[in-house]
Length: 218
Image (cartoon, rainbow, N blue to C red; front, side, top):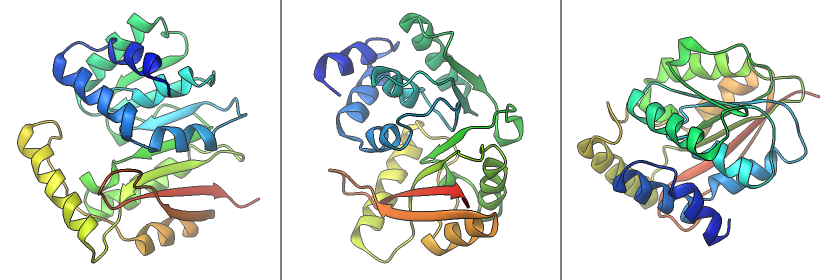
């Protein structure tokens, strides 16, 4: 994404803290471009679970994606800020942001994203959420997950330190509950009838992040 587009999206948000966060994420986080590439050429709607400030929707629209986007998040502060940003951008017709948890899924059969969400839930709730997400997939839909995976390396320890500061700052409420392993996620998704591909997605960050892409058997 070019600098002018990043600046335009950043300007949509209310506070200096929000704008600083948005600017940094759009400039350095590889997950948005990776998701846009996976969704290229499709018109299926997208359900973004744990959407936060709705950045993925803005990124996709700026890259020419025009499929309906529904963002869901339990943090009412972020949803309110995201709704104001959508309104300022004039995207109310294509982007819908809703406050709610995993039990409040809208009926939507298309693609699903879970970006940096799972580790804030206990293990059993992670598995339940994954199964609920799979039921939102269309036959040609893709479930896109970005998450830290539990591994014995320094990147995992760096991630744990970052999450400590996120929790103490109040940006993320509740904090980490369980870091899943690759085998945990693969087992749950394959049992649900999906083909699973896992690859590193750290970008220029020190964190132990992975991209997990799951699709119904074809």
